[in-house]
Image (cartoon, rainbow, N blue to C red; front, side, top):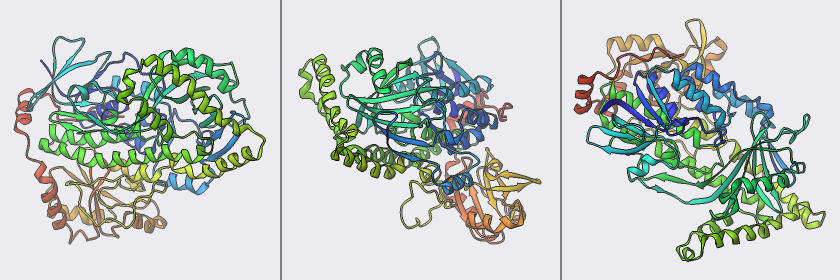
Length: 615
């Protein structure tokens, strides 16, 4: 067998990010990807600022390449509901509140971006190719796994020799072969079957007209949502009820007929079509021995919210420094148990919001009798065991004929009648309440961790806000963004966080450095002091207020940028409290796994230095 410290199944956003983060920590990985080329049929398209922060932490060059793909903010601000594309029923303008944009710019060096996954993946794959600590193998599918107590063997379809790994991370998507091979079930409902078409339509929105980011379309023979991508490309999606319907059985033929009717244009070139199940499902476990699940292999959400891709990037960020601590930092294998205990509550909250967004859309369309609840109920009914006796083709034929009868109700949206005017007015009034679907800054930056590595504080009153983010240094939260003075240069404070240790962020760095020299931190990882020095005297008060520890306190930050502990005490008072926290919460995880330590000592296959290719 060939040895590899970490094998990653899947080179999507999650697997690629994990491999690049591990390289940042000096850990080699082997990435197995069943596709020869990146998937060019768009999937996710919302890249939130937190993901861009994580990619910047991985490599500033990578973040620059990704942000270069993003269109200007003022070209992706309109969310429209319509019947015909040219007749708006109502809109949300994401830039209608200038204070919101100002707030977003204060929270991060990055802004949320609209970048299709088909644009993103070639950039991530290029980064894998140029990283010397990543052995990237496209066109290589995992065929079987054999889990042992201290190693895991990974078999592929192309190789006669298995890979012998300390850890295998399943990042191979919603239909994960690795997860299924390990017998880990998903739990949660199927909400709808979805079909989509990716197409090019250069004349769809002529110059000088508004090109909405999203268009929710309700017509007498079609209901769905259209997403505008770069270069006059679009993706159009709709729900269907049964796999024997034409949209699933002969999708290209279906879309060749449907697109001209929906768009009112024949200047269309179909690039690809696809189907998938919209679900809200979470794996029973994110870890099984030496196997860990991440991204869509661990959790699946409806697309209503944009949490899928971004939560996978967060999974990788949480997991990478812990794997590195186990393989090279002397930590016990039990540290990896905190991955699930921290991430599961976060992704379950994202799932809850995604499902709420999905069904909240019904408040717009209920007057025309088209609701997501009805689609779910019908989908569940058609999957009932009693209907297994009916020939599938007959059920598909019936659904193809009953669906247009249901959709005819939307004809009222075009009617110049009192009822038509009432329905249109209802829709226009309901649209502003859909804002949480498209603006979820409170969840984007405000997700928090809890568990043994986090100092417990009394929770603040009230729940977290979905739309509004309130920066805090409360343990478990992401360290707030701020620009500080560092060696005569203003720098984002996140850029100063070490990837290989803990950061003690404080407005009083000199005093804390002296205190730690006199009484070293009892930390299993190096502790680096990072100064909160305002770029100008006028900003000092704002900076002190933002970090919530006064002028002499400190915030202890983990390698993934999340707060572990904080104090308002001075450097002369608080070190014993810091050491007590580290001794009670962190040191128990630094009892090295003897099997891993023995393997590393024998093979020396994890280098003691970080990758030289960090840019």
